Length: 343
Image 1 (cartoon, rainbow, N blue to C red):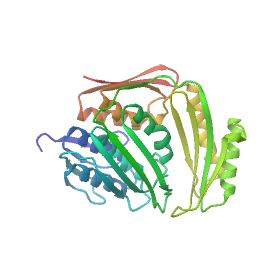
Image 2: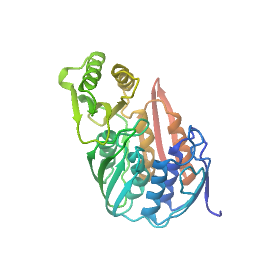
Image 3: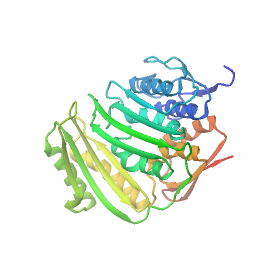
Image 4: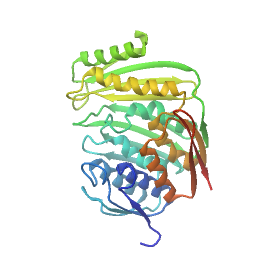
C-alpha cells in the first residue's frame, strides 16, 4: 500500500507495545500503517481484548479506516483521518488493562486543541501494565508540566481476573506541548508504602507493609493499608511512592495465588533500592512512557536506569513514523541519559 508504513510486530520484545505505539504515532502523524506478526513474542499471539479495544478506540477518535480488527488477528491495517477531541467511553470488557488503552489514544488528544472527557473501564491494576496510581502520581503530573490541564479520578479498582474497574480522565489541551528536561531528582520529600486489599484478608496487606518497613527501615507513619469494598472481584496491590523535589516515582507489586506477601514486598524493595542508589530521577518504566510526549514536544532529555528491551524497541518504532533522533548514552554505572531531538 503506497505511503503505508510497514511494521513487524515480532521486532524486539515482540509485544503489544509495538501495536500501541504504532497506533499512537499514526494518530498524531496521520500516517497509515500495516502491521504483521502482532504480539508474536507472546504465549497467545494476536489481538487480545485489550489490544482490540485500543485499536477500536483509536479508530473512533479519528474516524479511521481499519482492516483486521478482530480478536486473534495477527495483522492490521490502520489509516486515520482527523482526530477529534470530545467525550468518549472505552470499555475493555475483561480484566485487560484500560490504562494501556488510555495510553494509546492519549498522545493524539494531548496535541489536539480542545477538551476531552474519557471514561475507561476494565483492569486498572494489572501486572505488566501501568496501574492507575502510576498514571495519577507519576506520569500525568509530568504531562501537566508540559502545558496540558489533566485530571484523573479512580471510580473503582479493577483487578485480574475479574476487571470491572473504571476511571475518568479530563484533558484540556492548547494543541501543543512544551519541552521538558528531567535531569535531577532532588531531595526526597516523602516516602509512602500502601497495601490495597479488596475482598481479601487485611492480614495480607499488614504483612506486605511490615516487610517494606523492615527492609527499607521506614517509620510506621510511612506505612498504610487500604481496604477496598466496591471492586468487582478480589485483588491486592502494593505500591511504594518516592516523592522528590522534581519527580514522584511509584513502584508496584501484585499479590497472586501461590506468591507470599513477603515475596511481593521483596520484589518492590529491590526496585526501590536500585532506583535510589542510582540517583536518577526517571525509573525504567517511566523512561519508556516519556518518549512519545517528548517526541511530540520536539525534544527533551532525562536521566534513567539502564534501558529495557521494551524501551529500545519503542525507540525504533518511533523512528519509523518521524524523522527524529533519540540517543542514549551511559554516564556511569546504572545511569543513562536519553535525549530526544527533531532533525
